[in-house]
Image (cartoon, rainbow, N blue to C red; front, side, top):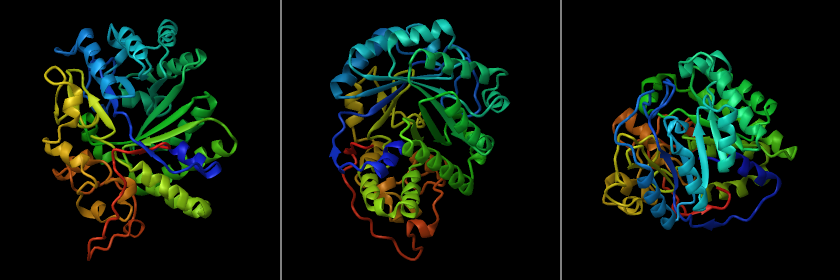
Amino acid sequence: MFRLSRFMSELLRPTPVREQRPSGPVVIWNLIRRCNLNCMHCYSLSTDVDFPGELSTEEISAVMEDLRAFGVPVLILSGGEPLLRPDIFEVSRRAKDMGFYVGLSSNGTMIDEAMSRRIAEVGYDYVGISLDGIGTVHDAFRRLEGAYESALQGMRLCSERGIKVGLRFTMTERNVESLPEMLDLMEAESIDKFYLSHLVYAGRGNRYREDDAYHQTTRRSMDLIFERCWDYARRGMVKEFVTGNNDADGVYFLNWVRRKFPERAEHIHEKLIAWGGNASGVNVANIDNLGHVHPDTFWWHYDLGSVRERPFSEIWQDVSDPIMAGLKREPRDIKGRCGRCRHFDICGGNTRVRALQISGDPWEEDPACYLSDQEIGVDQKRRVELTPYRNRSHASAAS
């Protein structure tokens, strides 16, 4: 995850480059697979039926005890649609009482007055609601007429109750033209956070990888987001911009800084190296509805172990698994142009599951890197010597 607004603030108020060992990974937890929608790009292949074998309230509580003892700081409660789970508020209150930063990831369509009141009572630190475009564009992705208006109303109700709300947008060629309107919507509705997710070829999204935003389109979109974020930063407005699932964004931002603010380029470069890029299997983890652990939410096809059989803390540290060993390796051994990239210490090789879906090899280059060979310093005749980068188990205070 690339926290653009934090790096943008460094252009105005630089802070020391420092590292601190994170206490544990951020855990994205799919508590339920059932969903009231049937979205085109769903990574969990959810639908509106009950899925057997999901973790009980008691099992979830026991896992949370282990997560807290292991030092996990953040729980993002997701689904399916987590609001369909009868014990969602009980689980959420328990997580808050234990001291976790607790986020809720919802499609927003179930958030009416009563639901927004219950959400506010829990005291979630953040509620993220996904929109795939304006009006009928969103409805088409969600396969439900009126889904846009329901989700937007849910966002408004949460905002009115003082809840931090984020707009989540997964960009593909089918909806990229909606991006300017989505950013305008963020301002018009006083939304706190904008999260751009690059498409990952996983779950239902794998069927639509031919719609992945082409590289030039991605560059134009990132330019637009950079300019919007910078405009808020220079005006002193608190708006959070985050991108995910394409760590080349950090390198592209560095190039933007070199053009716009060359005097800050070296400082940003050091901050980006401290960030270190892709964190799957290191600082980001996923638990699915059945209790299986994955390197992140897009690795549902790959099971690291079950929390019903072993504690999460044990599973997460087990590098006898070849995928976990490869993800935790410092630096990762990546092939192709990613492995030859002179900015490997910033990006970390980008998204491994996307490489796997295309090539069958998780250590191949990421096909969604939108940087040119010239930008990444690739010489096809020789392998570029990589500068060893900082320990991937460390994270910058700005990351």
